Image 1 (cartoon, one colour):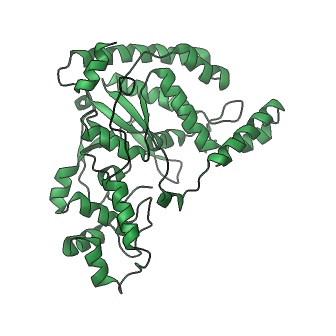
Image 2 (spheres, helix red, strand yellow):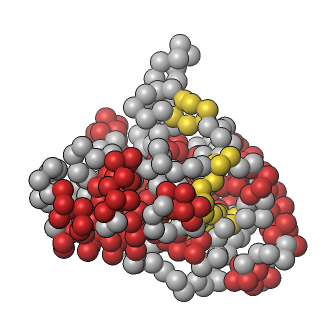
Image 3 (cartoon, one colour):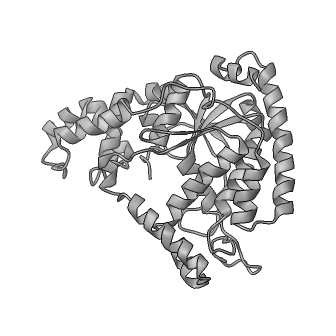
Length: 365
């Protein structure tokens, strides 16, 4: 979901050519969900459903990742994908722990395939207990086979992306959500897509988009708040960790924090005007810690920052043998992928402003 700050934050158009030579930390679940939501249409324009293979599992995220990484390389951009780790207990109030359900449905699905029960396999593959966890698992496998680095964060993928930018490993974080700003990400880029369009939420139509960048400190200065106060605003508006306060939207939250400076002062003065009983001192402390002192990886190894040529055998195993995708089509895309990767690698090697850790990794290629 993410915090709704779009009406307050200034975003500037950025040309894709300006991203050449940049490293971008990718909020993997956020981007993969967008790729997964790509659907097929019938000739008459009606919705034809998810794109499934013959084993009744969705495949749009796999083709989507292959195309998306190829797009990054074609723009001379190196991606690092970050995945969510352990959910915060606060987030689990809204999203249950599905690991046990996934392991059970995974075994159930495999049994259905063995018994050739196509309809049961389809039902299991499309169930919430199985689908998303399998998509994330397969996405990691594909990225590894493509030679693309990914990090499994101790907690939130967005906080890890923000840390990579803070540590000057990456130049931007890429996420459609605004939680990256709550995690203190200095620079955020949105709408990175070759097609320059995205699906409208809840509808089977697409809208045009343009790549935009967000500079955190410039926005904080313009709004007249600190990052600490931005987190307090998010508590009022609503985040993945707390639903917010009824009757308070982004603009109202900004005015209240500008007036009272911190959440505790607002609660002391306005407690009778709003339903704020659930905002306890303990909740405030925990949410602030999540955003201001997130659990992240800060020790980066050569493997963490290593981009390599794809392992074709592993790619074919996942896409062609397990999902029965057209081998010739996959091979054609891999050929383009390798060409773009080599051009991107050579471009980075010649640059002098590449982060030192990354440059050391490139020197070993």
